[in-house]
Image (tube, rainbow, N blue to C red):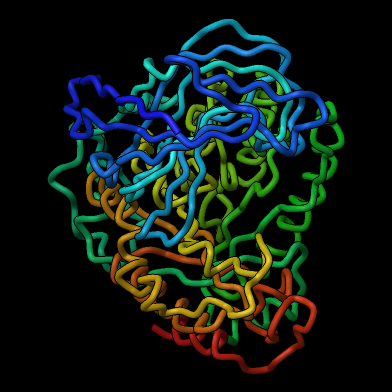
Length: 522
């Protein structure tokens, strides 16, 4: 163990409160500290042992906002890691006490050789961070890496996507606002906007739309059930196209798959919804080009695939312009961007390009924009509004993820985590705190908010109360919402119950179903 001071300069005119920290480094077998250098030297065959250095760091000065770090590093002969998320490490590890989850933002990994250069780490969510660990070195990868500890800095990170329109007030046409509120006009609308545009937050939205995400292919019985339940909104997910990670994009095959989904939507889903007075979100759940090993979309790094994404929405807009019953075009499900993208291909600019292409064809139908970090609430802290009319901002709510996805993303413990949970501090106020960046965005920009997904796995103790608390918050804030999901997988189904994924059985009545139906009746 060796101590190094962490010098924190003022960057971007931001004062830093953590100056003078002393970091106490703990190293593993193949990591060592020589002077100001941390050296990770992992032989081939010893990848599982790795070479890492870890130190606690105080990040309380960055509570509720983005935080970044930078350091000078170099590498030689870095091999492929055993898991895609490992390799070269420059990472924070921290528990967000509001979200109740652990987070591990990391710099993009590197392979082979790279000369001494500044590498950067950015955590772009509005998380609550007090104590955190900083991790350097090589994990599950062989090779040689050096880090100059004297160059380590905490900084306000610059997102690798535009941060703009910070004073913009969103504008919506009368048709998008509840008819009861069309007489209320905003005095704060920009002068260049027509007088029929309303500031959404200045109105009292009395008739929120409430519903569920669709199964992958809908039937008449599905619609009969949803109508009987009182749902008024469906998020139709165009899901199921699979491309193996690393394979070249087959855009022709993607187009053939998508055409089948659009045909089902055109000839069955939309007519059934209109017949029953429902609205439908057209959700492009699978973007063209597939994903990288780091779970980023390939279109972030390939301009040709990015252009195909924009043209896809141009084709959809031509086909459905003016059609009754469409709540909005959901451009990009759960975008994830961890680092730099190709020029004009970052997650925000791609949605902007697609939205502008749609507006050239369809000036009215709402367009749904999602935040980074798989549409997490915390990522609204660095989300910019679009300077276009009728843009709705979508969020997905799975906080605390350790609760909502227990037994899904990791093995469930012998004692499942309940909700509410006094020991972990999970309650309705926790959920409000987690959604605060979205609420702040709504107020700051006068934005209409839609909760595209929220849920808790069927076997999570207290899931019905979690749903009730979420719905109560959404209703308080005037947000439309759709539950994830209806007749898609039994684990999320309110028509199934059981202690785990292998023992779920159909159930005509469940506490989660009652919570949902009560929400529809509001």
